[in-house]
Image 1 (cartoon, rainbow, N blue to C red):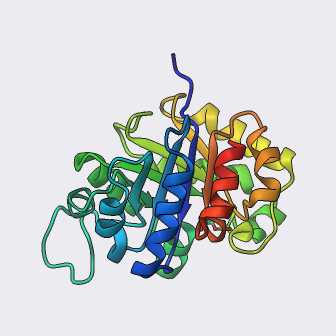
Image 2 (cartoon, rainbow, N blue to C red):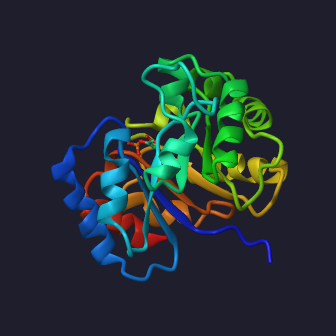
Length: 241
Ligand code: PEP
């Protein structure tokens, strides 16, 4: 059976202090035995504390980035093994904010994903076009090239998730049409190294649009930013999956 797993993943980005762990506890309490995978990726400072707060629950914890090297002189960076040691099961890699803010290339993202795999983490690899690229008709070329160069050898459904996140839809309240999401997800599915890899949509997913997005073929869930910060909003998205 190669049916991709259904996944709702929350990306807290650079938001969250210890007091906000109550939102994670509330989410876990709302889904004591979830039939889908639920994941929260807080800032690195909260990974260990959130993992401890969620022990025994159905909600798993992930990081938002890791270094491509195992250890060494990389001040400020975090290795995949450190995330795993803190209780993480997943790590988001190649988010457009890291590609833009830190100049991360797809080649680097692939190296980071390999490091994540070696540490036993599932890599959530993000791809997505800018608005200018969409307007120029380059969307499929861009995301398929990113997929090809960001997903490393050895990626399979057990260690990799791919998230399609149009850059122009992240944090803007704008989303592609359902047909546009379907077109990209169909193309990504056809080019995955393992057809069982889960494909998430990300970009302004909220309770009001989650169900119609999840109804699209080849959408196996969502990577959610702003609407993952509150258990009530994220819980409504999880319930729609
Ligand atoms: C994201 O950060 O991955 C994201 C999709 O953000 P938002 O849901 O806020 O658009």
